Image (cartoon, rainbow, N blue to C red; front, side):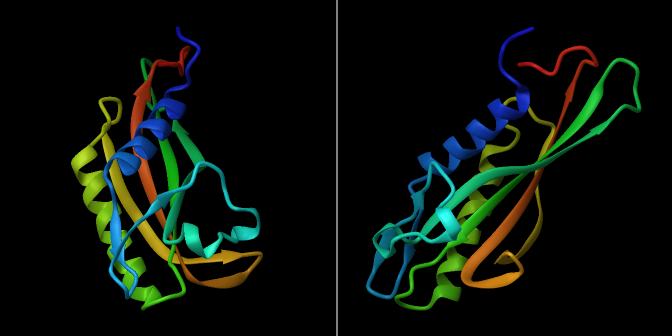
Length: 152
């Protein structure tokens, strides 16, 4: 046993892969680095000078106890993509989505997971209101642990 939850380690490796990828998108006036935010923006409002940006958070975890010797866990990580108001925000979101997908394909299972796959992409919402210029990518990452130890 360790004091690190495997899901935490995967989330940190997922975010580190994106941070290390040096993602850039064209905002109409040339390429700009995509900021990888450490904390969720309050009310999803990010200052324009920090855009384009993305944020990673764990939205859910599913468990399956089908086998006696292992618990299969599915960690759901969401990546919120936020475009800058300049240029074409939809183009920026498309470009960021492609870069995130390519980065996650290259990252594989981070040395811990069986699968790392994109399961959906949708326009982000805040209290039911659609946030134009914001997209939500949902990844499912499957891994196994012993029934009595979810740690790394």
